[in-house]
Image (cartoon, rainbow, N blue to C red; front, side, top):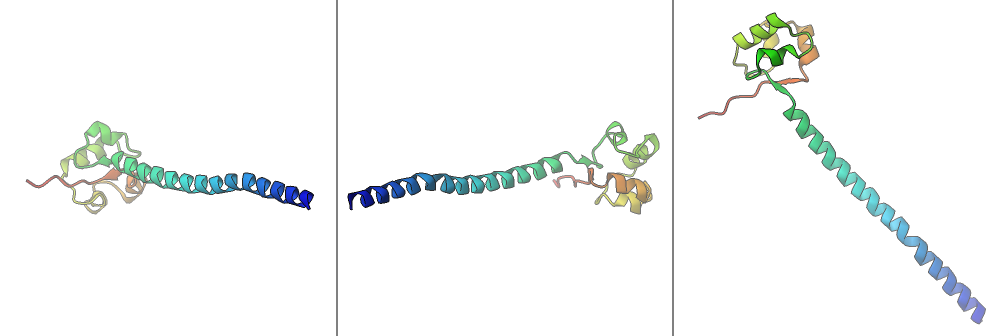
Length: 114
């Protein structure tokens, strides 16, 4: 009978000892998911900050965009302000193919109203 008790206690001790890593693995997975969500949110915010504003960018900055050279950058600056970035195509400043290359790199921020 004593041997049975010792075996039972041993089994209980081993199960208690083995259980916490599984619980901490669940906590770690939850923590990893939360940190991934935070970094994705931060990455989206940083991506928005890196967009080139076509209403304020210099000609030199605009020339860094693919397909935009001296002529297109000058036309973009001359036809400001833009209410939306797709006005570059609507106003026939750049062709649709060029716009398709740069549309994810630009933004048309509106000036603050006074």
